[in-house]
Image 1 (cartoon, rainbow, N blue to C red):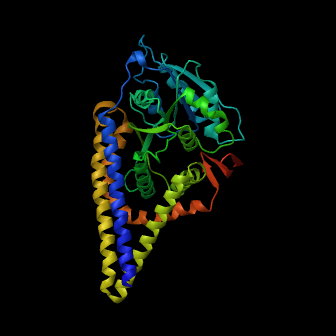
Image 2 (image 1 turned 90 degrees about the vertical axis):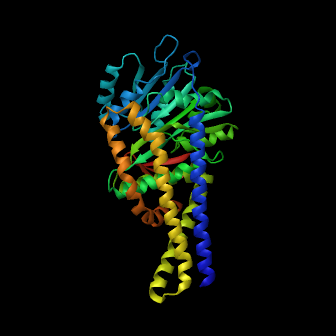
Image 3 (image 1 turned 30 degrees about the horizontal axis):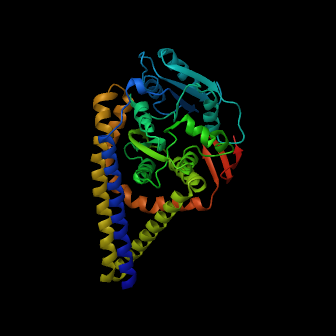
Length: 423
């Protein structure tokens, strides 16, 4: 009993120290990047094509369009130096009328609204992205891919593009920051999962692009042969991450391009979302998936062992059980302190300047601001549950190869061999 108790305590404390190290590495990275943020003079701003695949209406969609079409990114003649290409699967899509309305209000920004042809070889999003890529202005030097639910800042494009001035960087990326509303347990679980995943963004070996906000030079896209890479493929960002790194180029996380999104959903929706993230990791970024599996196994093992010692102590009052239980208390306490520290950190980085200087008139942003403040105490109660549920969800990705995405179901046979199961 004593050796198992000591082993459990050591393993638990090791996890606690790793979490502290990983978060502080990310914090140091973000502060350093924001302190040395690159800017581009108007005379040096390359022409940009922004591709936004759309399917259905996301929360805040209309507000997102307004910000994207009103970017602070101009050429020497003070005209917008970018185009936005919207790609839908059908003109009957709910997003179509909203896009048409937004375009009328921003006539100076060059835009294209395209209906993608039917696809059977890759997922809907990639088909839309490749359709948009074919329609890009031939003079564009940078291609930016964004999701339709991204709440961007007014200088989003400049922040995302500026690091590409360094030729050793082949791909830049933002990252999604989920904010749950009050007492939405599935949303809180998704937020915990997502914020812990963000720790890898500061690791130069494992950093990955996020398809909701990523930019790449057109010459790099040509070298990769993106049309071939995404043919019969289920993933955009992780496959592009691997291809860029295989060229000997770096992937750069740009903290100024953190974007906020609603985290809320049902347990079924969050399960589907988490399943998709892990399944794509398994097939398109195996190194990171293996690390995620190792983390899930360790955390699940710790949770089971701690529950065993808790029950055994209640039955026998054996003092040996207090050794692992004290380490469990230390882990939870350190996680609570970590979330408190990160809450203050994320507030200073993302929420405060955003709320005070940029979009205070937009109701969507006020909702984010209020939800962010209210969510802190709820994390204190969700963490023990996350220790049990999230590892189980993660480990189930070992046994599955089917994912659901925007109402469609796909089976991944191999990275470049997928089947549309249902439409």
